[in-house]
Length: 300
Image (tube, rainbow, N blue to C red; front, side, top):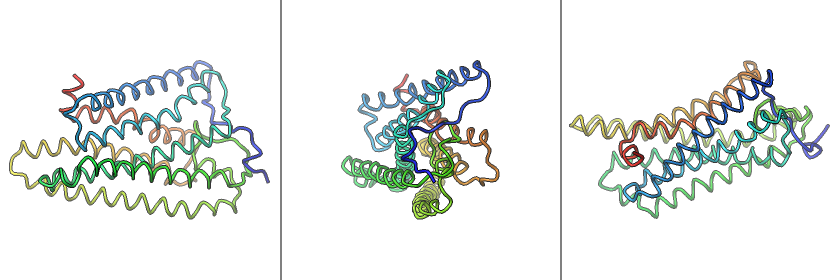
């Protein structure tokens, strides 16, 4: 039996093929990364400089853009470097850092999306109490709670994952250090130590998902009661971007972590991981910019 502390590095999944295909992967990831940097950077700069956008909805969107930038910066640059230099090594410290930041950023993003659904619920279902229920102090407290929960979850999950003894070598079948792939390297008996944390994770995700669903059921009921078509259109315009982001995030994440292991293959795992860790940070700014007239006007 070997422990993870006996390894000096892990081996990430190499992109197979010729040198030309590796360089193609580098260019593709570089284009996606630059698009994510540009899109999220524009949203951050626009919200920060325009005082008309200093509202709860845009405050939470600002946080979402920071999380997206962090998430894609955790995985993509290392993968591009490995493709460029034709290597697959990552240090144990680097692997642990990737696991921590992915869990922290994606976990915080899901908590934040739940908070954003509450913001839309208050704005549409209880508009007269919006300033009272979501004042600046309340928004800061909500954001602080979301980030704190993300940090706590990531610390517990990362510490528990890397305390497991590894019996299956150090080759991670993914282009970044992903928890399911590291757990597959652990001893069969030690894997049960992760069970309690997986149960807690499922409960948290389920509660957040139920809160989002309940919020949008109430929102759609309220929107359908709006007499004017213009009013309904405006209400939907502020909700649809968030709903699209939630759908993209939950669907890709569910496929990644709930698919049967018997149906998994390195190529399928690679595609799924790209869908939930790379695509959303690059697509989210486009979704919000296309559907939000105020943001489009300020960026123009």
